[in-house]
Length: 115
Image 1 (spheres, helix red, strand yellow):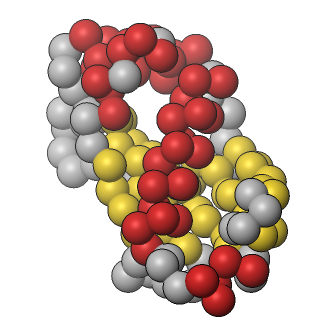
Image 2: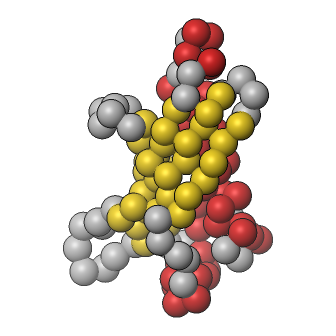
Image 3: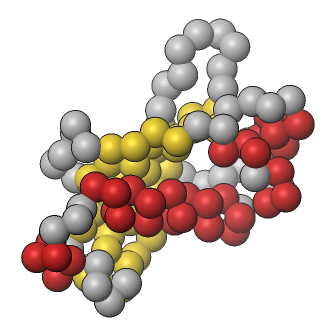
């Protein structure tokens, strides 16, 4: 569970650094919505809310992470299977109010050592 949180926070920091280059923005508050999905064989993946990260100050690094749902043992086991079979665990991060700005990261299952 802790490893998944570290992975999600790392991805969010990547989104922050790539999407927001303006120094004047760094003093303001930023809210990021994190969604995830596990690879589905039945059809298109459906993202579901995972966490909300509120960054009070990008410069100082002050942030609060609130998980909107728990990571279950069955999801952890399924993620292990995906990693073994080179499957996909997808994470999408969007800034609140900026639906067109976001990132979708694939092949996070390569992080097998975290499992």
